[in-house]
Amino acid sequence: MANAASGMAVHDDCKLKFMELKAKRTYRFIVYKIEDKQVIVEKLGEPTQGYEDFAASLPADECRYAVYDFEYLTEGNVPKSRIFFIGWSPDASRVRSKMIYASSKDRFKRELDGIQIELQATDPTEMDLDVFKSRAN
Image (cartoon, rainbow, N blue to C red):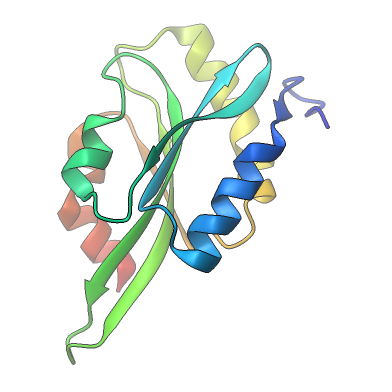
C-alpha cells in the first residue's frame, strides 16, 4: 500500500524481517532503503554483530532507515533490550533524498509494530553508543 504523502510502498519483507528481529532475535539490526518508490531491506545484521558493524553499514552520503536491537544491563545488572528506529539522514545526502525519507518515515515506522525508541541522526555522533544508553534507560 502506497503512502499518500510520498507515494511510497513498503515491501512485505520489511515487516517480516522486523517481526523476526523482534520475536526471535534473528537479527541484530536491519537497514532499509528506498528504491523504486518502495522501502526494501538493504542489509541484515547477524545476532553476533555489534554496534560497530551496524554503524559501518550506514552510508556516509545517503539516507536510510534502520532498526537496531540494543542490549544493555540495567543498574541492577538485569539484561534488557530496546528496539530503536533510526532515521539516518546525513548532511552529505541529496536534498531530494532527505525530503523523501522525511515524508515517508512516519508511515513506514507505523508498519513496524514494536519500535520502542526513535532516533533521528544526521551524523554518527547523534547515534553513538552513549546516545543509545541514555535513551534506553
